[in-house]
Length: 313
Length: 276
Picture 1 (cartoon, chains in turn orange, purple):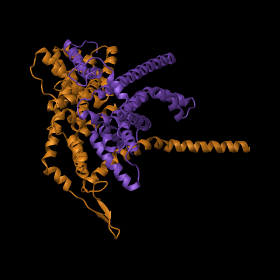
Picture 2: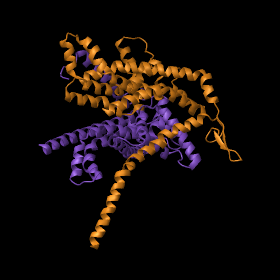
Picture 3: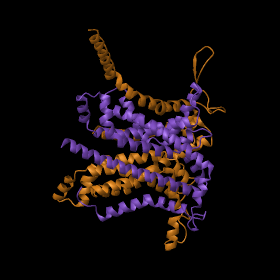
């Protein structure tokens, strides 16, 4: 009798524990990543916003307090808009924003023009070859980004492989000046980000219903026409996803313009870096980041929209 | 698709692949050049590799970077897997949209913004609660944040295709939902876990921009040392280091790819056997 009672009790306890886990246990799974990313990814933007209203000061950390408690325990808020005014008055910021967008745009276009036929050729090869090609395209993505940019320098610098070969062949008589030009930055971005363009394109092209193309050709469409009318529109999600994956990080690129670009390739990432490490003006750097983020909100929203749509399917 | 690619498409594909690989091949070639001048071939030599072994600055930076990468990728694997399970298995919960946004945004956020904002966080935290001092801790925390995003996305897409009914069958046979997940689903998503851990490891090992912002005065990581040398021009010992890294990473990725594919094939065969 007693035994059954205890058994019953433990059973009930276990059931209530299980009920608790069923009801709240999911929070043990949800909370750790949610809290971590909230604190270390989202909250930082709040601090950046706060510090963008501060003023540079000679102390550690090098900025003034935005709010402080007055002696009579009232919160005293000092918001300085001078950093944002400075962004609009100093030409360098507007110029570098525009330059970054232009550079990212043309690099993305180049990536698309090279990446699309590559992805299309991959999607049309046999299943076994597709697996190998995937690996071949992904492998550079795993190798160091910094080292790949440095490797590209070995090809395009004045005494690099490209110039040596062209000189040897007699195609040119003086080395081509590619390093430290805007073209070198384009080349660097295309070289580094090409896999990001190819993979989403390949993913949509591979799933494409081939019977639609056959239908188009049965109805008398020429291959080129069928491509424009059927394949291209259907692969638009891949085109947009790939372009966003290249365009957004490319705008903020620092390493490529710093290593391959000339002194005039003032991309916003480079300006930010210098503001921080050379001028030590943290509040202005924070204001530039916030303004930059506002500018990026549109493209990032497009990216999120497509990613979420992709995952829901 | 059964129809073949045209010669035009195939040649673009081959040229594109050559474009991706040629610079790295040339770099490996240069690393065996006896001459310190990049334009002159001075004969085959492993001189720069022995030089590398005696460069204390590079060796200690490499050690530091490997430690950081091991910690960050393990942390990201744990958090990212939890986030993926949450997003795939729980259709509705408070904060779902927030979590979705926070795991996708780091994938496209320019590193320089993430780096600056995280530095400002760490500096403010240090002022408010006296933790963390800039150094290994802050680099690891920053790396965990962006690697978690990559892990979540990889594991999420694998979990979505995992067959839920197997887990339900295990639960019908008396397993708790936790047991069912560990015994049934975990082995299925193991390849995705392995590859996302490896990916996080290499991303952390490679990161220059975020580390430059959040690291402290005495914690220069390997990319930071490489960058400061490369900025000054060609350095033959960096060619040797780069070739080593490319070789090691390439081998690891190929080996992991092989293991994953073999595991997949075995699993498919077993499932076929089980279901007749």
